Amino acid sequence: MQEKEVQQLARFAKALGHPIRIAILQYLNRQNSCFTGDLVDVLPVAQSTVSQHLKELKDAGLISGEVNPPKVKYCIHQENWEIAKALFCNFLDIHFDNNTCSV
Amino acid sequence: MQEKEVQQLARFAKALGHPIRIAILQYLNRQNSCFTGDLVDVLPVAQSTVSQHLKELKDAGLISGEVNPPKVKYCIHQENWEIAKALFCNFLDIHFDNNTCSV
DNA sequence: AAAGTCTATCGTAAATTTGCGATTAACGAT
DNA sequence: ATCGTTAATCGCAAATTTACGATAGACTTT
Image (cartoon, rainbow over all chains, first blue to last red; front, side):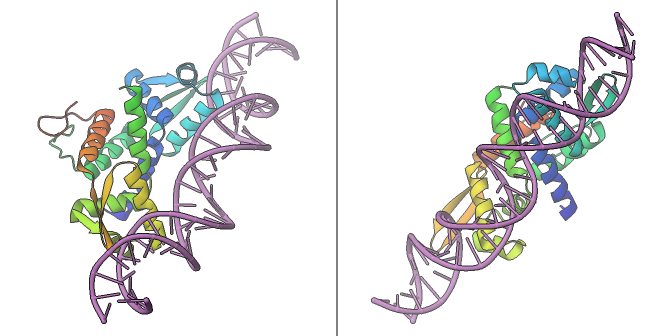
């Protein structure tokens, strides 16, 4: 594993290192996409806090937001999500077959 | 995914959220076990800093240390490592086959 | 043009993290 | 008993994270 990959993996892991952000990503995985407001309704923190967590996930590259006035629609950033998956699988020593990953 | 699992996953992810800690775990995965000093030799940070990162990994449950005076031998905490694997795989939507993790 | 909706950003405070040098603790060897 | 080795812990400073309310910006609708 290259140094760059270690950095990238740590970056992703750090982004996942908060329960609210895990919850956001889970929600996005289920719903495919959602607005900020949907998350504010569901999560036990203030709107500004949700926004901040979304920003961190976006900065880490795990999600992307599409402005859809006056709302913003978020979804998983598929390409980077796959990269994250690959890095985690590699690191956790999970062996791949073909398309997904299997042990 | 239960709330407790979300918390646990976030805890593990947080522990992985630093390049030095990733490097430590990688080293442990390769070497099976090692002393603190081995890591100090390899990592670009001070001894006290390495010790601190080891403490965090231990607190997160990912490693365990066996005192072997005057050294301390660290290794991956296999049981918890498997739990972490399972949680990450589940979260990242990685499909399993058989023996190790299962969804 | 004014009002309303939705969300990002600002300002702030508290808590946590990161890193270091110095010290301490534990133990074996002399 | 003293010395040497190894590693944890302490004390500290700087940076980052977390959370909130308040404000500001973008755009629709009235």
